Length: 347
Ligand code: NAP
Ligand code: ZN
Ligand code: ZN
Image 1 (spheres, rainbow, N blue to C red):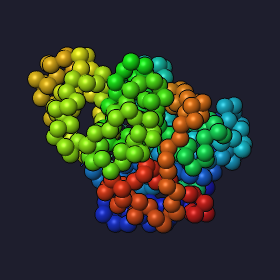
Image 2 (cartoon, protein in one colour; image 1 turned 60 degrees about the vertical axis):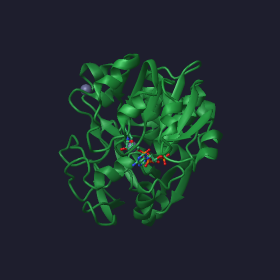
Image 3 (cartoon, rainbow, N blue to C red; image 1 turned 90 degrees about the vertical axis):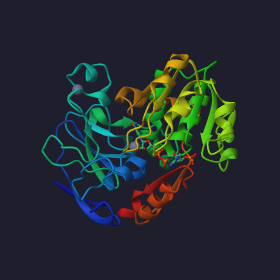
């Protein structure tokens, strides 16, 4: 057992505290990763604040992890000591159900093992990436191309795959008009990835405050959702809308922006239900969908795609003692566009 430095939440309301967590001894197929950077996902905040359900405190969150392979078990073949690797939102799954066999481990019929807050195979609660080291089965460890700047690679492991997967599934590409709702961590990557896939991209943000950035990320147009005229001007416009907003939005208003056979896919995960009036679906035969992260093979495909296309998140690197302040800024939508913790500040 390895005891390593970490930052943990001890309640829904208190500040995060410095502590230690235990990492299991390496099994034959396990990898010990020395973590270098960990991204801050809004899901970390929903989780530690108890918005998604009960939490087994103390809990160390963080599921956007990059680091170096420090040690490998005797049967490990996919990664070697010194490799730059990443871990995203899951660290295991049953591997036997139809979805796992199809490479869709995120939809494991027996429930995948989340990187934090899940029951691990040894019965302990998994602890995430705001820590100096983690032990993960090699099948859930990704290869992170060296051409992606180190600190910027971390957010790809959740924000990157969560947006890449629905964009690929609903065929964002040439001739397709895609809107991205919310220009935060997920949203800004959705814009960059959809643009790289060849789609014509529109940003729908609360205000025009980030318009220059949105256009610099490659979006063709940018509209404020705080202005009701936006919803008239863009009626029946899009093939695909990716909603990345962490709070409830007026789903019917956004559905009306879809043209024939268009889909509104929600990756944003507010705790409250989102009412969907069916009459907004009838027009243009629209669909309302959800999507959860992506499979392991698809996550590798996304990392390689981002490396080839030179796509990297915009990050603000912070120290381990600045996470509470970063959470407050995320909650105020004051993030450009992902906070990443320099894990060296925890050593
Ligand atoms: P984030 O960085 O906070 O971005 C969310 C954006 O939503 C904000 O930047 C803001 O954009 C907009 N927004 C926030 N509050 C709003 C409100 N009240 N009304 C309208 N717009 C609002 O969060 P994130 O890390 O990208 O995560 C976004 C959501 O996706 C979270 O709910 C997270 O839990 C979820 N998530 C889901 C998955 C999945 O697998 N489905 C994976 C990761 C994350 P503007 O300032 O541009 O309006
Ligand atoms: Zn996440
Ligand atoms: Zn399974």
